Length: 220
Ligand code: DC
Image 1 (tube, rainbow, N blue to C red):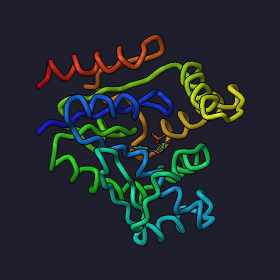
Image 2: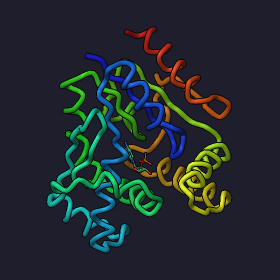
Image 3: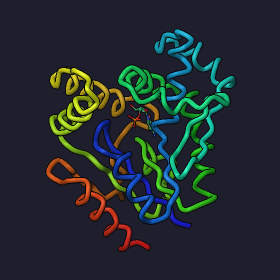
């Protein structure tokens, strides 16, 4: 069984790239950000202040996140409800960046993530996969791009959906999230010592996919 870990900052294209590679290699794709996002959704719905660490820790035993697959696409269930359609927005992303810094939240997901890698060839993406969740992964990739490029990609995505947005505000949000994710005490975002750095600022999706597949060929 093989495992591939892809970590990197918000908007680096991890999930697009990871989905493509998992499909081509016939691996199961695990989007750990979606798991943190569904916990964030739980607390947004309850109106919990993300700074109230005690309230969040006390509530964690009541939250069950499970993953299911429909036609190969990951679905996230929050206490049995399929929340996949509700978690991909900035509000949930920003809340996830805050609540994921709380140890009880990370503890609630860690074993689940580790267990998934014991059952199948897995490609997992997130912030701490290579450094913490799967320290023995066969291949670790640190996928990044400049904040300006990441903001432009996000902007183009939103415009394509017909939304109006301000590219400078998007870049500011990205920089804030990077800071939060990199400076937290527990499992911060950082490149694992044995990870291969892929900077996609000047690469298209096909080029990134090919580069990562070429790295996998070297280790398999
Ligand atoms: O990758 P994403 O944007 O869906 O992740 C949302 C937030 O979840 C991110 O800002 C930090 C957190 N996260 C984490 O702390 N650890 C992971 N392995 C994945 C995500």
